[in-house]
Image 1 (cartoon, rainbow, N blue to C red):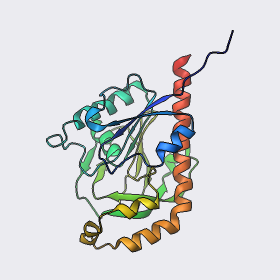
Image 2: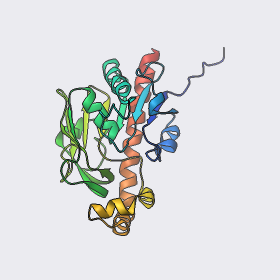
Image 3: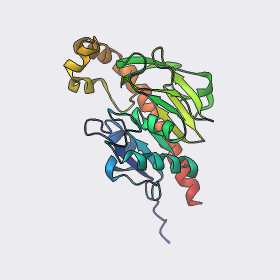
Length: 244
């Protein structure tokens, strides 16, 4: 009898805004043996049924802006179901805020000092045994692009990483749902598409941001690649357990 073919774990990738795509995750996760199914936010299901994992991408709005983006309510339900069912989830920027808001956390708009460009994130001691972050450096540069912040984590969340300007940079809910405020899917090249005038309004100059990000890109890419590989490992483990 021929051996049974095992299909690649299916990952639902939700894009909330055209310019906030999956970036290098679109090649990294398939390289790690995952089958990506990309959908636009308005067409995302509100349950992870049929998928082995979920990735919620970013967007330039708050996670409860239901009046203008009515699909966000369904996306918050998707986040709640994923956590309840133990389906691995990775929320990035807005996706992290959706995960927090869906579970009773607080997200505040225009809070603190905006983070734009390359900034260093520091792992907290709680990350030492966390499957997503434990093998990353104690501190590593990442691309940031936000002015909104998670200010109160949901009850039971584990705070994993922080930065000088934004205390909540990464957290975990349950065993396998993570939110990261930073952008592991984005490399320094993405800054070429940023709005010069919007940056100037914050007192920032795009050329300087790009130069700094490009200098740090090798270190940043190594950390982001490790994070993506760690998430893929969790997905494979969960998919294998579901088959037994």
